[in-house]
Length: 310
Image 1: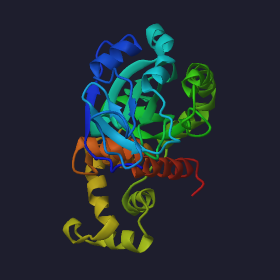
Image 2: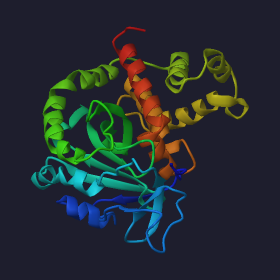
Image 3: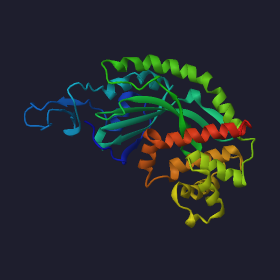
Image 4: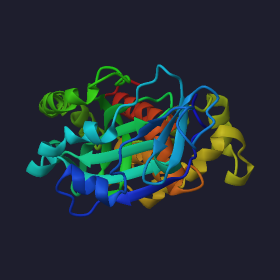
């Protein structure tokens, strides 16, 4: 049975990591989960369930059924070691929720970096999520990241075609699958980034800008109409986010003021910089929740606008 996940995370920004071991040491995640049964001496009254225990702190992270077989995040990450030592992947952050019940590691793939406009370097950030006792299981995906303003811009590719299920020796797949996907992505994403460049040439200001923001965050047109004619303090419901997105729009023009690129970056900047009470909850939303969906929808609509399809 799962546990309720906290929105707060402990985030480690990696510095000079050149191996998986150094990642694990810096983030204090260099441990393997222990499975403790109800009959183990002196520990957990698990009500017939097994406890997944973090051994360095003797903390129960979750209680699971007899059929549950946890994978090891250390073993799965080990498949990345050659890529990290060769510089093909550069460790960026590790986020830890609930003492280690959820772990999310992010790594940059420099070979996939592209320049969209001047100083705007965009590339897919590899995110690997591990869950001990949660329904999210383990997953890995690439998400666009705009390095200039630390702006995550939505998921662009799954590492696996499906989530990695809890089954024996799944970690042995990661190295082969990742190597293949890095090679494939360098070709697959050319059209994706061409769409971004087209956004630089398409103007989007005034009322159409409001309409775009509303569609991107899933606001009904009637509410967008009200937001257009109302003062920010008078806007209610989901449309109340539009003034905050306009603030993000004013803070960073992406080097292409008044364009679709400018507008798209305002939405993703809102999701990664403004939405929610703190940086940890925003990161959780972008990695594991609705934020990535908003960013992906914002991209799809922006790409259609830039191509003249809407």
